[in-house]
Image (cartoon, rainbow, N blue to C red; front, side, top):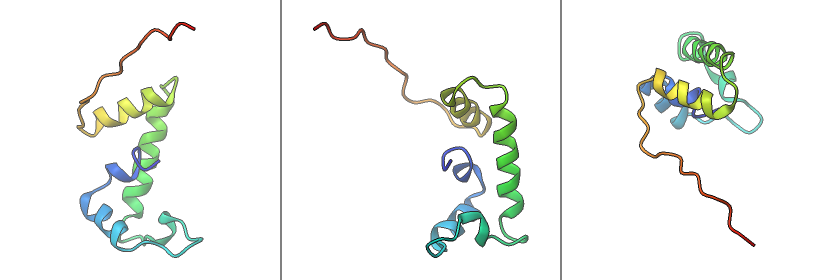
Length: 85
């Protein structure tokens, strides 16, 4: 969830979240006010849901979200044959 939602919101909101951790039992989104972060957070959630509707697996969703927010892939997946017994 962090990679798909919280890492894509504005730097100021991300910094606020890091500096103002909620007390135990309170979720991140419950501490935000209408003026600071709720709209960005809800917007990101709906964007991720929209992208997820066209994905077959979580890997595909992660790639779409990364591309959408301007990230680039730096490590490729490498497939190896299974070891012989």
